[in-house]
Length: 545
Image (cartoon, rainbow, N blue to C red; front, top):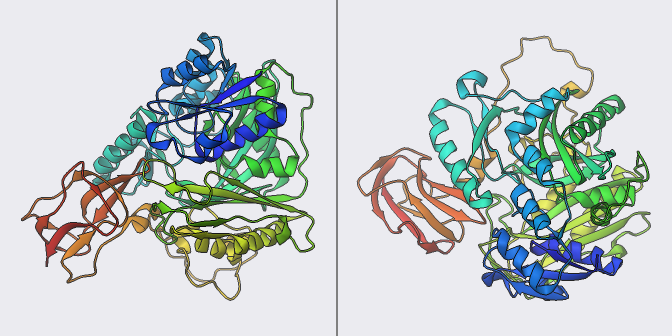
């Protein structure tokens, strides 16, 4: 392999370029018309402008014109498209990823669940809302990364949730197919990294805990998963390998599970490299991108097991509001990322994988991730200390980021105790005061109950909480919480509205953001129309109580 085109952008494109240079492989970037000034477009050996990152034939034509031998899809966009993989191979290029057949089987969430059942892997119940009951999760069959997903707690929410999830899925993946499955309120999210060659060998390369999430997207990931019984870990590895073999998997991939106590259930296969792959690299010493390339070139895996050494934690630095997690835009006037001089006697290291650099713009069209910070230490406590020091050294000026949230997160007693679930950010609102000390959850330590227990409280929906915006009762205007495009107006002048009823739907970074009424009242004026681009703080709707 002499020249490789990365059919992607941002941080993952730069990450692949780095490995290619280590291997002596020339690199080719592609860039959409609104993205030609981005860091990845400036960093490859050659750059080719294409109409869209979602246009498969443009990617292949670019590879042919620049004389590339292979295409790496990264994550997102076309990374899990069986049709794209097939077209790449039909064009005589090397596809760095799973076979088209495996991508189709694993990428169709319903087919994947059927295969998992047949392979003896436990799965969450799916079906119609009447069959599985509430709460349930509406999910995009072709999706991932939190897009095309909605938690639905009652029948009255179902129609709107389905419509929004379908629009998001079509916009992000070009496929609006949805399905429903049972929603667990407080599970852990555990995923197993696989490597598989073209000769039938499938190996589990450790697991990651990805339970800290907002909008169903991961914020903090670590490996190994804390407080995981060795027997459960072994069962997770066996289940992931069984699924990989059942679909004839090849390349690097991730099998995701939810863990409820010691019970686990298959969620989905991510037939690509994961955003959080560096924590696995840190504890195993592997370069997973290099493994993908070697496997695509026909190499066999030389071992059936990999040993983890130490502990690694990753956080994602985003251009977003640190409390509401709404994406932000702007010019990065200063960017200082941490280096290994933060360690102060620790035996680990810090890694920063950035997608932008000082002077760049973060816009509305793409994911607002600035960088990933990965800390590796001899044990979990040391890794978290290194991460905290790295976050203290990090500086971003000119754009709002979640840096203060990440510092809060890295020092939170529940995170330090390794007791987070996917409900962590609903039970511990971002930047809320830290408890003086952590009291372990009662189900993790011996306890005694002398009175009848009340029914468990349902945690608030993080989507609803993070998307609330508008004035308090008695005020008369509702403004845009962030820059975006108006995709739908839900009300007209004269309409009576209830508190928290959606008034306007904005879109930014391929996500839909509903703007709600802050109180019960009547719509006086609507100041925007579908298709309008609005700035943060722009007047949307006037209300009167």
